[in-house]
Length: 406
Image (cartoon, rainbow, N blue to C red; front, side, top):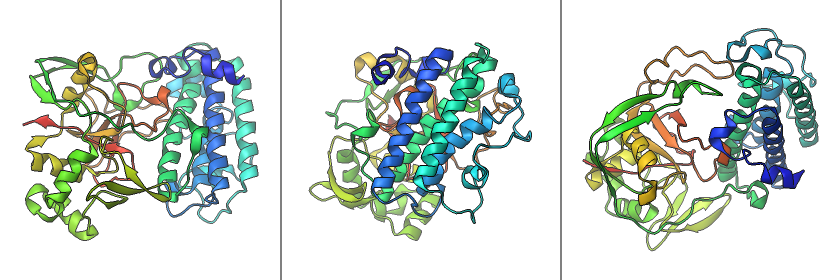
């Protein structure tokens, strides 16, 4: 079975994943659950099962939610065959684990006891078995397979959240969660000049389409110069060493207030910049490659660096046009999620999208948009149209940025 999982043609294809049929989904769901179980073993072995404050830092909750979400939308949902129209607020059938809702339904019951790893391990195995049984008789169309594709995407995204938790809880995942891992060090490349032309943003109908990707539309993009790769530590350290965190002129009002309130002088986790960048990664100090993409920076830090460098963040349309047209000239993405110039808002026509399993996109003023994926993103979740909204102060994510000429 392991060999079959590795060789299935659509198993790691981010575009095919969203339109996968029953056979492909069965393999992918098993692959995702195997990864979740390996994460469980990693946190259990490191003695970090309970974790710290916040849902991200409670591995038991995040891991168990993979099984809970799947059961909630599939085995317990009487309208699962209705696809996107399945009611979110309908009463569910009883869970196979009486305490599942108290443990895993965010925000959950704060007074609930923490389950033992073996309890969660059994729950993950049992919920997957039920899912695969129901999948065998599901209609082989978008409506019939919606909740299964949804559960797969959800579990793949949880894997990256677990990688974030591992970063700050000092857990070394090892090869068990490959192919994810730290971003590579890249040889510097000159920025690319993009001629004016169209950018096709969003996803077309068909298969699983998250609300914030609805719908595909075309916008004109003027000619521009854009970085071929994300800003590296070597680039960012120059800003730090030049006193970038000490001068208000590089920051907007809210960013400067954050710098002063936090006493921040370097990105999150960084302990040293002179001579080499040394940062805390998974519980120990590590020397980071100078050519690696800078990570764990807020939107404020990304914007401040750009002002200092006399550049700006790329618009979503510029980022997308480069992704679609400049790969043959050395344009790369997928090392870090990348902050863009645009504020967080739905695409035209997508503001009222109600899709079973997705919370309505309700970004607040000042939130940003991240595009791409990170090196810790499960490959089949690294869809080229993927976008996420994030608060400007989020630095726990694997987020960085690239720049454009002003």
